[in-house]
Image 1 (cartoon, rainbow, N blue to C red):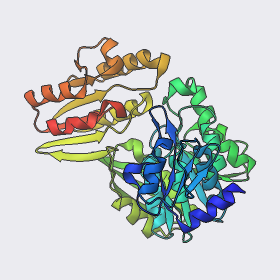
Image 2: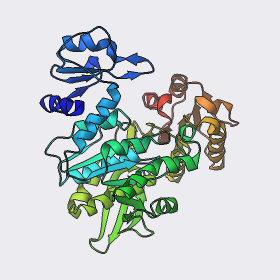
Image 3: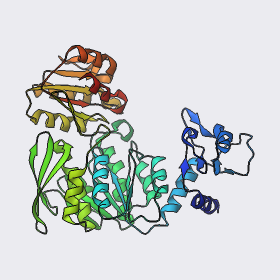
Image 4: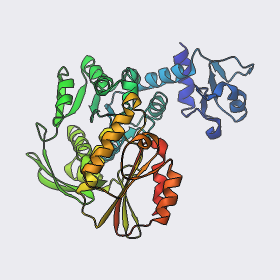
Length: 428
């Protein structure tokens, strides 16, 4: 009963806010709580700022007819989003995975938007708060929705599926990410696989990279499957060039052969492009639209970006990092043709008991690749054995880089979000 009442208020005031610093008159304000904040204490301020209603779960002495008391504000937000989701009879595509899910989501949004009115996750709002906020921004004109799902522990994806109710889903890969929360690599597959479990139980459709045997195995009980990848996909993909952006040759019995010149750095982005093409083909997007949308897509937010600084080329891939994404990024970097190379890596986080071992493995691989001009920053890199330059934080690394300039170089900058490796760009 309360969700129905709340939904009617939402229909009249369809804008949600959880931060009074961003609150505009007429918006609904949800008082959420976290380790270092409790928005219930801002209820009176939200009313004074013109909130249409304030949803709160604690008694703070604030009395106003705009106050709606609930048992738990977060659960109310999620329930409201689920109720809103149930009003749509359109494809809801869930995308998760360890590496590249945001790029895959953005590529898929680009191709679907060429033909359909498509709503998607903005930035990385892919968690317990971001997913309901994303769903609540979907308007009546929607023809497609793409929901990105991030996770770092078991049952998280399962809970998101109960809110978003996806009709379609894709796990682009399961790598060594969030090992601490998931409890190892098998834990990652189990956690991400919760999406496939939901699709199986609800007769949904899964898009599967056939080149990854474990994904084929994880999806064995799903009735509706569409494969991509060269093993048993709908088309064959060949990398024509990777210097440093990827150009792909696509061969399909329906379309024939064609070429896509992406603005994505790294051959490791090929499966992300293949996934977007596969999804677009399922929804009958014209080939010309697919090709144009992918070629026009420019990555941002430190994800597979190519930057030019003077006569240096910088591959900025510093939004996040884990052992799997580090390995493919370094492999791609080694394969590039450049007069001089400089590798700048920040520490990997959320690895728990696996952290030191994984950092040492990575250092050993770099040594084995013959890379000499290497800078390591922060975390467990400090405890590894290596011949490279190490700095406690990015500011100290930046200071050293400004004193030790390079020219005509290819530079890779990568690290976990908390290391803020993108700050190094200003040092070149």
